[in-house]
Structure formats: C-alpha cells, structure tokens
Image (cartoon, rainbow, N blue to C red):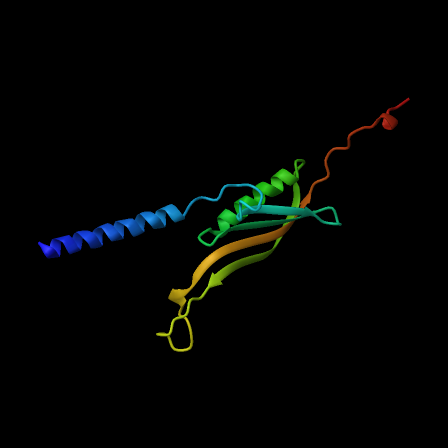
Length: 138
C-alpha cells in the first residue's frame, strides 16, 4: 500500500513538470520589442536609406522562426518590395551552470539557451514616382 502511494506521488510530480514545461513554451507574439515585450522586432533607418532590423526570440526558437519575423518586418518596411537583405548576425545567449562533476567545467548537457537574436539590413525597391503639381505638362 505504501509503495503504491509513493508511485502515485512520483507520477503526479512528473505530470506536473511536463505540464509546466509545456506552459513555458509560449509562442512569441509578433510585435515591437518594448518594456512589456522582451521578444519581437526593432528597427532603425540607416543613413544609406536602408533599415537595420533586429529580431529577438526565446532560446527555444528556431532559425526559421527568426527569419520569418525578419522577412515579415522587412515586408512592412518596404511596401513597394524588397530589393535585398543582408543578415549579418545570429547570436544565441547561453548559460552554463556550474558542474563540479565534469573535469574542467560544465559539459554540453548542462548548457541552456536563454535567447536568440538575428540582425540584418533591409533595402527597399524604389516605389513608383508620385507626380506633383509642378510635374504636370502644360
């Protein structure tokens, strides 16, 4: 009887941990990075007319997720179309907890990814020229 109660307790604890793990992997909502949203995108205009776009996501995100956010933001910045993009940085922030049982430091299995960032340039196609009043033919 006592062994069954112990097994039940271990089973419930395992289910609780599984549910907690599933709840932690929430999808990132597409939007700008801000005080309330540490994940998303930010951009700024460059002197050469292009944009620098930064995408930040949680550590469990894939490169495809990062690129999808980058391409979506590039499309928003360039309504006439994208001439070219140049991704120049992909960075993963990692945490290595102390592992005294491994000689010389932490092992690969003790590494934890905290977040990933992708940064690149976006250059827009020139849009159609909008005629002004001074351009009208006489």
